[in-house]
Length: 114
Image (cartoon, rainbow, N blue to C red):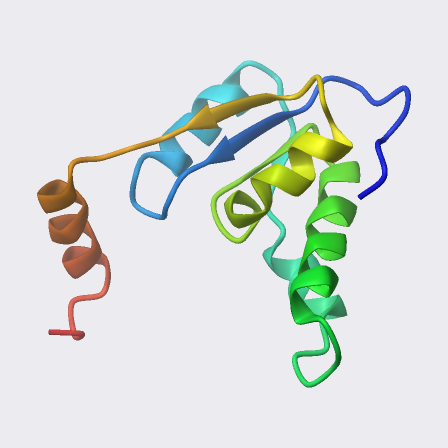
């Protein structure tokens, strides 16, 4: 990926779903950051039947990053290396959670999957 020149400071909240990414995003928004997500851009631009879906998704994540001060949650978190290459001065916040707490939260979020 090519590096972005003269880019403003970016902040990316990377971590699996249900690890505090939304809480971190609320805090950043309270501080005035415009934090977006790449889901809509990926849905609008990626051809899942096309060639090199990973490259298409990476381009969509980078496109979403241009439109905001940063991104949160997946799928952007899965492209942290691409984001770091494009925005070498960006800050990354990795959210984590204990395995059992994460499983309990996921089961609560998706209650009919057991």
